[in-house]
Length: 200
Image (cartoon, rainbow, N blue to C red; front, top):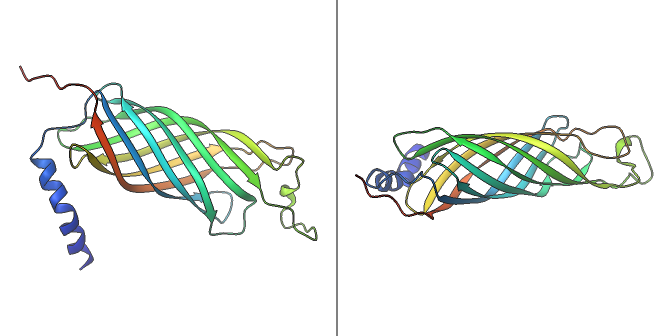
């Protein structure tokens, strides 16, 4: 039943895509917005984010992207952070296909704005790392992202992607790793900002 529902849901999009020309070209401007989940590698915590990005295709297979992850909260208590929002910018390489699929990979430096949880009251040794003279900090991070777009129509696309983030909290306490796997999928919009060249 579930498989049949998925087929029915995506069949119209596939039909539209097959009848239209390829949209993945230089000058394409695209954006995404969705919920994302993150699994920290050093703590038993699953983080939730609102994520979004804007992307411009400098060439058919090269794009520049800026993105933002706004921290909503965590399902686990075994971690020291009450805030963990991130912004990224970087370049992406898109593997050329003969259809409307757009697989990509990219490297993005960024910064994370983090805030440590308040110390336990009365103090305990549960979180010895959250006693800091400046609980809020901005830390440099880097990420690698891989995913795939499906340009269903001239104006919309579907996507799914995975991101690995690496970084260490900048603070005056023992190092806290910010390493995390993040996953997102959903809908996006797209528009071509350049006139298409007429076929010769």
